[in-house]
Image 1 (cartoon, rainbow, N blue to C red):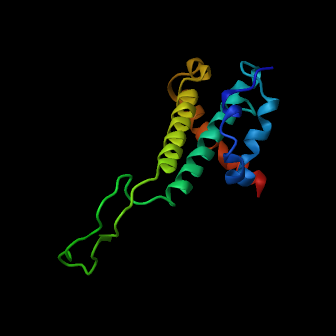
Image 2: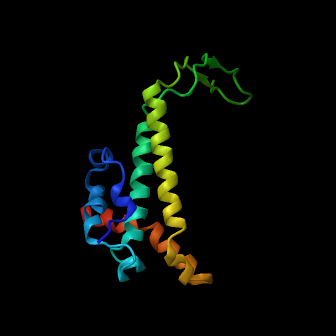
Image 3: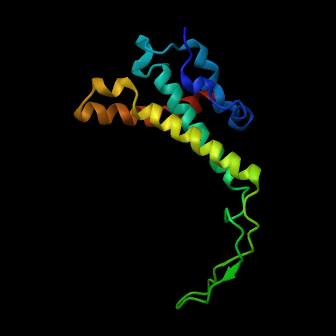
Amino acid sequence: MRRPAACRGPARLGPVLGAAGGAFQRCGQASVGSAEDDFGEGPAVVVQLALHQTRAAYEQYATTLPWSAEPMPGWESDKQLHSNYISAKPDSPGYTEEQTAEVAQFQAELLRLSTEVVTHPYWQSLSGPDLVDARMVLQHAHESVEDEAA
């Protein structure tokens, strides 16, 4: 049995994903091209869950980064009419080489997973409202996993 590509995702995401990482544990149970492709516990769901989890890990990582990828001076705007808010940013040292590499790795993984979901053969078997309904079910597949984990 060949493992879906999502199961071969970055191992470093395991600790970041916590309980939601259960999708990766089920990878060994699903085979590509099986009858499970209709989104039961099949590879399409595993890939979609991996996409959600990778995006969440990327967003969490991005909160630790400087506001600018390149070194930039800070700034402070003028007070706006009818408001007391003054927008400001401190100096940004830019990303380190390691941070740039990590962001690139996350973006490549997100692109790969997105492409795998969008080009999954299952979508060819549907059209019209059925396609929209099936896509919405897949979009919310992570919610049932979160409910089970709670």
